[in-house]
Length: 274
Image 1 (tube, rainbow, N blue to C red):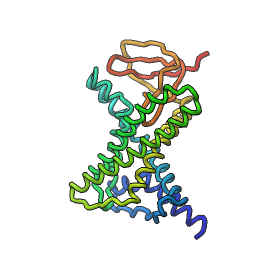
Image 2: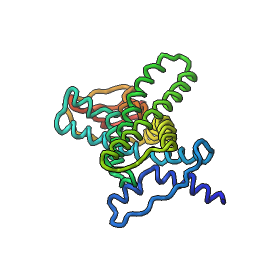
Image 3: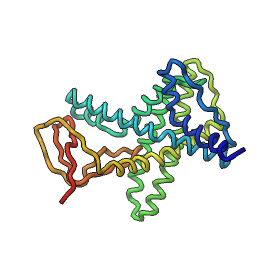
Image 4: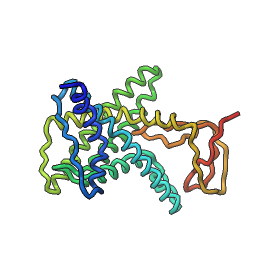
């Protein structure tokens, strides 16, 4: 086996399948394409670990994009209906957007053999809901640790554990609902290990990629918003995006001019302090 063949089987194919882009394409295309066949390596082997990491790597950007798009839609809904109180809080919550976005994205994918759209969507929402709640509890616990290195290490290990639990929750939820729909899909031991490991890595990698993207686009962000009755100057602790226990803290810009009303707050201009 050549290096190119190894990379195709263990890097490229798992990354493509993990992204789900071909399954989304098959949902709308008149002539669906066949998904790349991955020769699953032995659990615990080097090739298996590479496959898991590449599958997770392919999934990160689509899930982040789906979460951001869903969050934008929910906030627009809140603005249009003038949501206040609890409804406003839910519609503007970044964690809710990530959970719903994951479900919408996986519902859009054409299901594979033994799967259903409802099962896949519910499984992803169960996984991301576990990420969100578990990470929030973890953040409270690690915030008491004064040593930065110990806190970072504890956060990483904790996130992997939360992600593993979320991966298993997603697998069981998806399998259960697909079974109710008449799909027979007996879960294997390898699927358990795959879900546990991929969930762990996904929950660790999401906030790192999210923060990197925010820092990369920080200098060019300009968001136009409708005029509102109030305008106030705020300092550099105003986030571009709300913090999410799944995606992590948002990047921050100095001296944001905020304009809006009680239903929504809009970022209208970002200026460097002089």
